[in-house]
Image: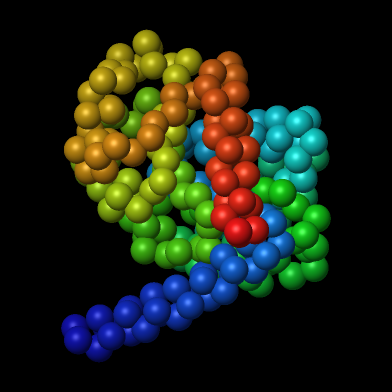
Length: 225
């Protein structure tokens, strides 16, 4: 058991070192990197696709990396946005790592991007331990998953900078209790900002886009200072 713990600590240490280098590289290039984490089925890919479309319409230069165990289905869906997209296949690994991000950036001119989105593997456990060099970590929760999901998986919510509730167009049908969900989120991460969205209906998307622009501008101001 001691050997396993030591190996895990070594893996995380190496990942953190690579993530710090990635973060510095992104900051120097002026790229705002967003890591989207969730369980499978939250509508993460559709949410990201609509985000890419909207940002491109606003004149931003965007790209995405998407992680899955197998298939390039999600990358193909995201590519419909017109943004450059690359699939990362983990072949059984339940999360993305900083080394994977670095490897899949080869050939991209980062200074030609404003935003880079990383759609992590659908999992609420493993991704919480792996820094990918992102500037913003967003955890998504669907109304179909139940209000108590944050209490069951507190670590991922504790490591996030923002929570986004998706599929709000289905809230009534699911008898989703927004107050209970808020209490659940804040019980494990007090004060964590929450956005309520529906990618299908466009609900909350303008607030999301405004938040992205504001956070990116703030990061660029700090870097310049």
